[in-house]
Amino acid sequence: MRGVKVTRDQIVDRAYELLREAGLSSLSMRRVALDLGVQPGALYYHVANKQELLAVVAARILKGLPGVAKDPRDAAEGFRSALLQVRDGAEVVSFVQAYRPDLLVPTHALRRLFTGRFDERRAEWAARTVVHYVLGFVSEEQNHAELVRAGIVEEDPAHSGDSDEAFGFGIDAILNGLSG
Image (cartoon, rainbow, N blue to C red; front, side):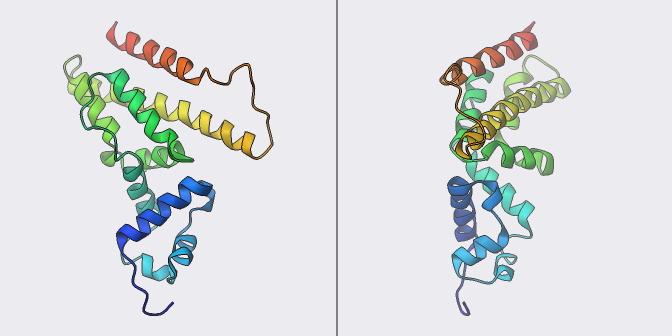
């Protein structure tokens, strides 16, 4: 392990892949270091702690989101789609929402979309309302998927396939309430 150099990009790439492969429970600084063939201390030169690593990984999860969406519903759907691409994506982004809310693109984009309808403070609240709905909805979807994977619950055929419709119903209810 001596002499092996690691970059910040390699650390973030490996952390992101671990998250996609096995979820948040498998993501630790020690595991990332082991996978990269370095001592854990080598990571701290590039990321201060696990919280910072999660913030960078959350930014990577949301990287593909456009900074400007046409409307709040499109922004919410894009946000949900990005979260669903990564196992435990909602949990990671929810943590970062509490830890470093300034980093998250969806809140900024939504705030801009609500600025014409509300004063600055209420535009922020409207954006946070939508972000919280998306995070909660996807978190439930991802937690259910984990429970099915673990064999703790069975997939419910009566509800499988209606997540998109249920999400749309909820986001429309929120947005209609905000415009009323």
